[in-house]
Picture 1 (tube, helix red, strand yellow):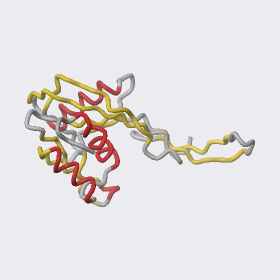
Picture 2: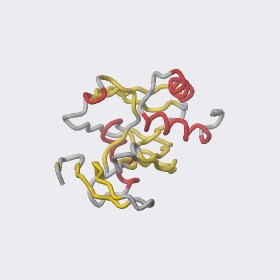
Picture 3: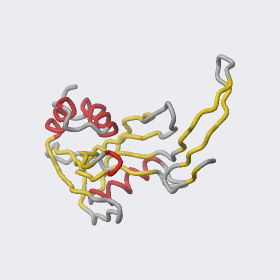
Length: 170
């Protein structure tokens, strides 16, 4: 292990490929995360305008966060939705999961749709600079296609949720 951090570990691994070649790869190990498409009764979706230094500024994102040790993807989704957006969902549906950058990282993000929301006390962490916005689902979906939303987990979460949102099409 070359670097062990609080979010990721970076190592160089010797790998035997299926074609028999042996190579050294730099690999980032990440515990994974969960993201939530939170939809209220008026079909508004919660989007966070969040400052991301590594991305060069502000991004539109779904409420999301890193899996903690021994925590399921569903529990992470529920925790992050309450902490960041100040809501809990009564009805939950899995939208699947995806690998973020499989060429060098094992991070997998699990996507969920949450409905029948109730307000709770939000508790963002000190490192999170967040504005909470509730916008019509169809507007958010359009912003994926116009390039205003370009965070991968948010794009994919909205696109996968669309068939489950009555009256919306992909």
